[in-house]
Image 1 (tube, helix red, strand yellow):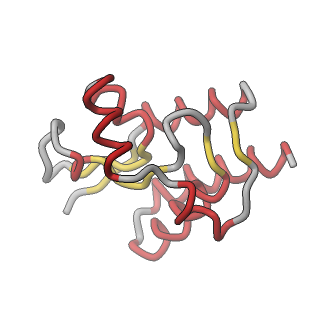
Image 2: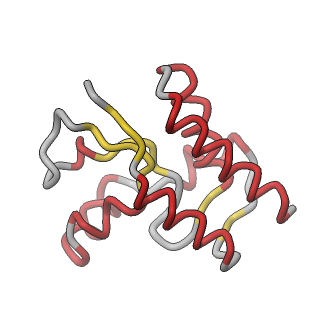
Image 3: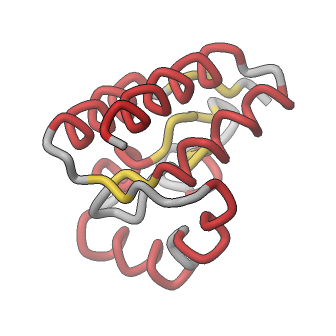
Length: 116
């Protein structure tokens, strides 16, 4: 699996944080705040995979771009960046040794913590 940083999503997340479109929630909240599969499917149906991809820090080159499996490391709910989602992405990327994604998530984490 060749997973790499989605620079477009990273830039999108930084822009949302600068606009303060964020949820400064706790680390353990992600299981409740992450979009459900139904919400993901509805978003894709309405906006397409191009927009969908802006909400995921990782891209899996082994998967087709028009497949949800291509997009990894969600950090938001399709409206705002969630601190818990960023932390979850940072921890998971570190565990899987995706250093570029880990560093990007850590940067976003720092930006969010500055808002607290």
